[in-house]
Image (cartoon, rainbow, N blue to C red; front, side, top):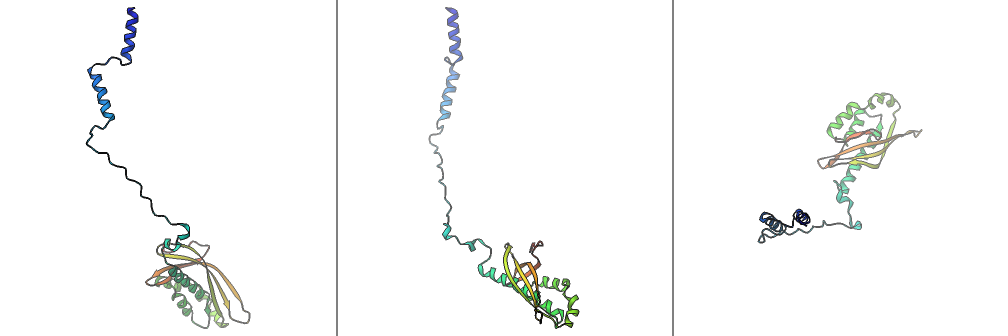
Length: 202
């Protein structure tokens, strides 16, 4: 019977049936820890979410998301198209400087200087002048390739039509034309074949 009583007593101790004063205080501390230790201190209230305003699809204004107004896009496109027309217009009865000046009227000051230095039109001028050939440039904006806060790049299809009995037509192809704001006007900053990289102001 003594063995049975000791075993029972040992089980009682192992499961915590008997606790000294320290254990009892610990139990009380645990109970306090689970409750509000400082009843006078108020819990902060949760802040309710603030839903952002939304716009129904039928009320969305696409132009509000763009860095330019519709009028500015139109003005920039007109500059790109005018430059391409000037590029395809050649009157060989005039000096080559007149050809450069027509393009320069649409270009930034720096790019106008680049045109005069790099254009290969002058090399053909003497030969074509003998025939007194006149080519009329035509152009049409096909699309906007890209834009950022400072520039817009258009893809423009250009053509040059010779005004003589043959009615020769030279389809010059598509060009990527970068336009930038210059004061209150739009000017051409860069001009390249559309299949070449054209990073505009970068």
